[in-house]
Image 1: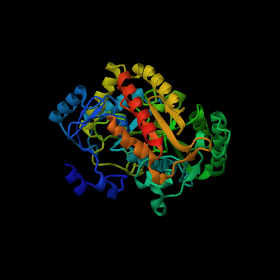
Image 2 (image 1 turned 90 degrees about the vertical axis):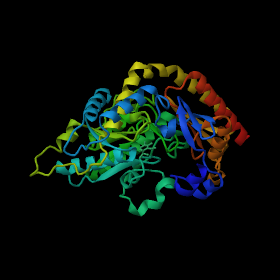
Image 3 (image 1 turned 135 degrees about the vertical axis):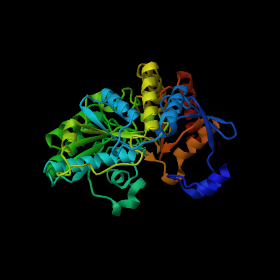
Image 4 (image 1 turned 45 degrees about the horizontal axis):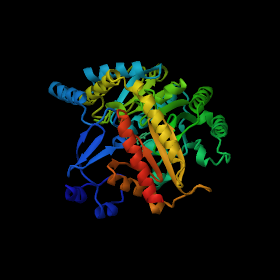
Length: 445
Ligand code: PMP
């Protein structure tokens, strides 16, 4: 299997020469929070299969829902037809989303969910006559996916710098990355938030006439390094968008579906974005599905008959796929029957205690947490926060070491990510944090 993989598969975000030398293990099964490889080795899935898995792998209830749906119908188009599962799921999503988001546009992955939000906001402004509003505000360190539009509103040069000539320009705002905030040397989270907001306010006032929308990862910038924004930041961004008539697009692809402790991150600050992008956890990590939700205000700008041509010019072949929607419905049922959100606080507290203890290690510069996600930033020198040079691949080496301790982890540069399935037990969480601590010590001491 490794030979087939090495010979035929082109893996994303991977130096293929490195993997020719040391190929990845091949996963053939999953059980709860564990992945099992072709040799029968078990790994606790510390990153929830790239931040998607909610209820564990191979949950019987979800498997049954998928099997039942396959026996009814596998796919029909949303272009000119509707299907029962997509309609029921849309109603359920509207019921649980921040109040005011009332329409659901389906696609297949996080990047397209964001891309759709961008195109929707652009066309919205055109339809209402604000034809100069064509630009977008995005944040330093943001990640919104790999399609050209989603890359354009991204803010991590390492990932996307090579494509710069292909991208549309955006107005880049500072993000409150408190540990390394250039605006605020004090490393005071409140002050850092205030200074970043002041700069954002200045940018928005200067560019209001030409800005269609602002794209933000609510509460946490995920791929940027699990960078947690100070409380109140999101709410203030909402107010500024209102003041300058700029649509707020919240990218909840990573943080949606319970990750931060509430169903959606925006709900922690009582914020309703104009447009909200969902994917990853929507099917609990089972199948590709995404949803871009919009308010009535946005939807109304597209109302018109064929003479007016107010169509939203976007649509994917597998939009609203019934099997994926049935899977999402089974996942939402499990949120209720397991009382999953209610079960999180003790685990969130335990994670906080373990992360705080890790901060004492001599090469842990900063730990960050929001609900059931965490980031552990490793530094060469704690006193001056000097990072390990990129080519030392310290984060990756910690994750390789963790495999020996029965964990599957994936770093973001020198930040170790903690992002287990939400159903993880306290014992499993202890196993995960013990393994992370041992691996960090082994590689950095
Ligand atoms: N937005 C955010 C916040 C993400 O974390 C990701 C994926 N890591 C995406 C968008 C892109 O999602 P996908 O990989 O499904 O295209």
